[in-house]
Image 1: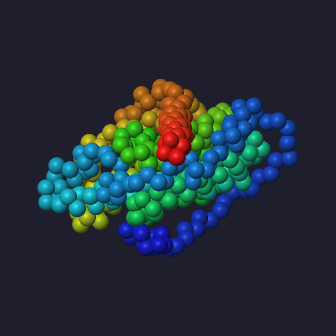
Image 2: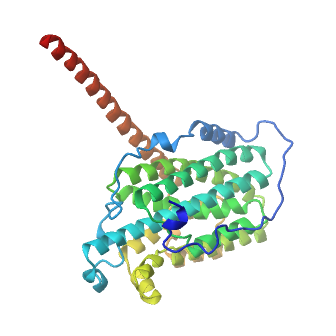
Image 3: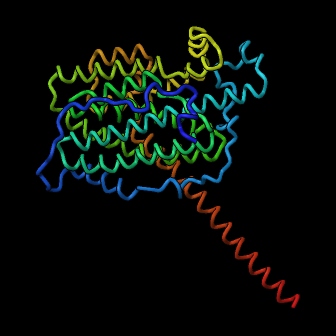
Length: 372
């Protein structure tokens, strides 16, 4: 079935074209480069994996309860609308919310793939080009996996959220070579990691947990790359140039906080836009998500050297300034450990199955010999 047949609302155009700006840069300096970036590049090569093989796609997913998270997380829970819904209706609501979330993940990963390719084209340093090439492959794999999950397990997609599309467009239209780093690897990837982690840690279903954990393992490297490259570059900027980047971060943070809430889902259930926005705004789950949303972004922004007075005031207004002191390295190492633990559990289960299969074969042979 065509993807367009699965959209709740068809995209207005089959292709979204963002005019390219800025220069493609070639470097003729082929010496060793920065040791930290080259080590990350080697890790990027070593950690490539195949989504067909590493993820167990035979695991069943109930489209009416794909994640197994409590219904209390749904904005309609406890309202008059919820009381009127049948169990079938509630199952449809769970399906729509999961479709909306994972659809935005899918669209964001395609955006990340395009941004990583843009970095390969525009960044002046060859070591950064090398690593960005591995990230482009990572993001392609992520888009492939989210697309497969939505097509095969959910059977429904949502169009890209307008605010996410706007942030992607602003990131890609900017001619400055560092902006794909800042827009994608700090803001959009930071948002994605918070959302991925929240679902990874609350879902009771094994397949979405695998998908999110393995993708987050890759993203930990991507954030490290963005931090290294931008920290070095932003030390060289003038105060005015640094303020321009901080303004971009401020606008992006408010945009993501206010617009990425899934109001489209409630509207598809016949709830007027104003009421849908109010119900979503008062959701305890959304308040928690908004708090976690900045857990990866704020410490990264501070680490790369964007910490001017206006930016700090914005983070005070958002109630997240203290997150600037979070240990981002610890968060990233935990993301890698979760994926590695899933691999250990899977390999142990496969080993047990092989041992049992051999034991059964030996027993069958012994029984057959005795019968003869």
